[in-house]
Length: 346
Ligand code: PEP
Ligand code: MN
Image (cartoon, rainbow, N blue to C red; front, side, top):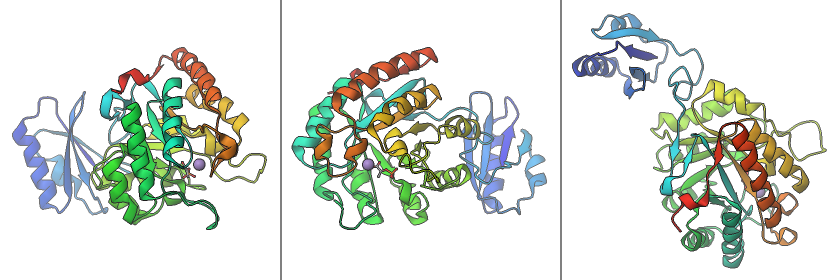
């Protein structure tokens, strides 16, 4: 529920609304907006007496948020959320941000080399998992904590920001300490205890869509993060399971405009996991930017044939370079531009 204040409502009137909400046993979130001041009532269990709020001085109207997710919805906040990162990198504004790097961190040499290559091509954020959610327990599981140290080293060497996955509650603290963006992977999209912790971790979160999650489920998972006080959330489409085995997943680009309509949160696209095939990554990355994605996250490996995970979908560095050239043109065609690594202090 959103209590919209009249234009020119006084500080005392806003404070009164906040205290009445608290007296009723709910949380109040004052939200100064460009157009108007509003106070969000968080935790509505359906028993809120709206008339008590409607009658308060300075209140213009009480809006009932009709969607099951509240704080992530456009009804709650119309202006797009821009997640601001170090070095002037912003996700959700006019710039399209490229996150790139290998699927897994494998060695210092590999991750530093990959970081240099993706930076040269135009990425501003380095990706790479230290803990890997693998379908088979016998597949490479990631380097764990030492992998985080290698990512920090690559950041030091290149000035790129780091986005890496926290797979469980133990690892989350370490990841949040080191990373610029904490990734919650597709398999954990509905790990609600992990989401609650990530909502309190103090770092922006990249929340990937679950393998067969609906848009509503994705947005409800994001709501867990906002409900815990973390408003720096970036959503990610990474393909969903389908009946067709021609590609690894069905890369659902429709979700980009759908989410932009329903939510103020930024959404990026992952054509690597979305397609699973190197030669499909490039056209679908272009398509994602054309569809309005606020960024792309792409797997790039210095030697894809030697990759310990997801080699078949990892681009060669020169392919990524070419992709970035194309993506710049597409971004410009729709009134945006690609964030350049110059924005990052090396
Ligand atoms: C990844 O980004 O490396 C990853 C495992 O992605 P997802 O959770 O989308 O499968
Ligand atoms: Mn991968």
